[in-house]
Length: 347
Image (cartoon, rainbow, N blue to C red; front, side, top):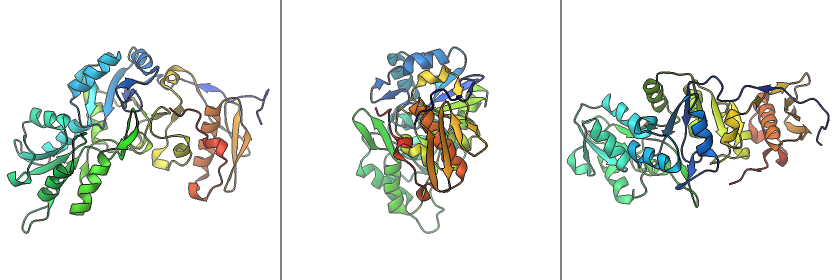
């Protein structure tokens, strides 16, 4: 079905072109487990020569200093001030919620404890210490006893307003070397089940973590680089900045074609090497067909039809996404051929 000899769509600027700030997620973008994703270090160092580079992570288990040290070990030119974490955003929210110096019950690891200490809050692990708030984030050692203490502290008490509860992020899973593991969202859900209410969230996809980055680096002319639609891409859209989805992490082609309007990236790339390459323009032809490169996809009612596979599976995915997204139809009511979401980039 390839269209040899047919005109391809034009190329536009590279995704990094004209950006003052690049916001890079870590898990699934820079590394998986302890090791770097092939090519990521080289491309990010190259990008840092023309734009400021910030590492924006929902992972609350490590301090900004520890994250920066890990990134330097991988070969990146990273300082602690380049790392924007969900604990930093959570503590900023906390500072607007309870008095300075308050005692706070922490569910999580060093990343949270370090930021709370910097802000002058006292830390406890026990609900018996009458904390003024609960702050929750991911750490590998978090277990039932930690979640139970949070539930005890958050339990309703007659004559008392609900205790403030701030969670760093909602990530249901985290990518590690062996695959996908439960993330902070699963731990928050356990406490939510016990106390029957939800916390305020600080990390992606909420805007506090983006606002912290914009303030620190002095610009909103930014591009978010991520691998998760429900955090990185949704957060970028909420913060009103463009986003790039890289197929080296969690969300795959099948999730992309089904993405709701609030989770649709501006760019889809296979690897970070494409940060610096001209990006193909999506063109809508007179009959409604979407063309990217030599790939063409059209919606015939509720059926997605591949008019031309073209010479690039990635352009076919881009064209398929464009056609399906522009249809305004819910994905569960569509017939989508498997070739549109075939995963050629599985890690």
